[in-house]
Image (cartoon, rainbow over the protein chains, first blue to last red):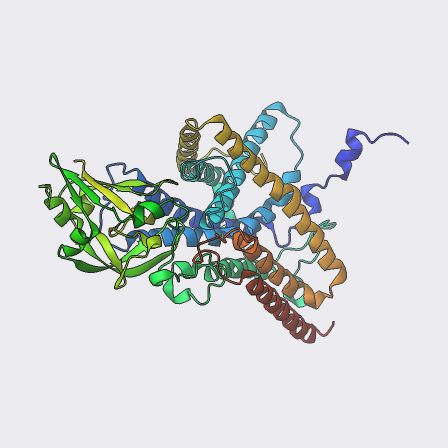
Length: 400
Length: 144
């Protein structure tokens, strides 16, 4: 028995023409690709908006108004990412036969083909990575050795860059595809994969049905998960990571135990250090409770896409810093008693500090804050990511 | 290049190409500060993503479609394919909750829903819908 030669193996690998194109083809790829491009565009823009909340570039008007903005942008980020999962799967299916195209013999063509495949490989890898890592992050499942936020942001640029490059290269084909009817074309002579195409009259699966199924899958994936962001979908979204419920009617991202904050937060010796203008005030919880309190309804919105409005009662931050002689338009750093995890401190820009709705909250929905919600006191400001709403605050320092 | 046009690229194409390359390079540049361990982990994820799709998911789809074509009557093919697309794509989108990774001990507000039961009901409803549609189509097409 002779060993198979390279030619033998090559002959067994299918070629693009072996695949049934009756439901694939330009008409399908361009339509699904356009929907995917729109979803990726929304996801990229809202994702960058979220990253800018952490590292304000200085040229963006990031401030407390409107209070619901981050809730909407981050909700859209998760919704568009979820919608993109079925879209990318069908998009990749529609172009799968191209993977089996044989390399050209001519040297220049070979180089061009190699570059094209490399850029498409980068697009596919980075796109799948973005959707997979984002999906896992929503559930707090960190199966990697890199910083999620930094890497998700960097690969987002790679994904959107390679997508824009891909659109540039394929623009004539995209235009042609969108101008082509979705009516079925005849199947090839010897399709190796699904010979179940054809039109509805023959019992085949039409291109129209395929596109409808793709749209339905996208819509259902969103409908069944978006309840953590969209209140009226809460009951329907049975696959959402968070039900929207929780102690004091609010979900919790990080518990006091997992943040190592219980000892500091529940200590009878708790004092809030207020530093500014060359002086330091130490205030007990009773001191804080004795100050004039206000109640504000504000949403809390997390990077994982969940959000919920709640009624917060506490002292406006601008009133607190006035006790150490600071002006309302000051930058204040908040430090937490938490001993584990990121975001043990946050810096609150002056635009937020001077807003009367920005509170050092002592109560949530009419009750004393539970320890998991930040007892004895926490920051709550309008239009700000949840991880930057520092819990278990033990020190406030006017830094500018 | 599979679909390269032999005509000269338009200005819009050149602009898109330049913007795309700039974004791509910025992303790569942003990663350079990361340590070797982080980059290796990312590399595994990027390569793994392609491998899982091209070597597992896509061939599996081809095999499943061949099975559908071979064993299902014509009237059942389209409803089955539609239901299968919805089922598979949604199941992949729900992977973190279906594998139990959303659950966090000590935090009942995360991952606290009966996801497996919901998924079984979701699967049964899709299967029932596909069966019903197949029967209706069989009647319309006059064959089973």
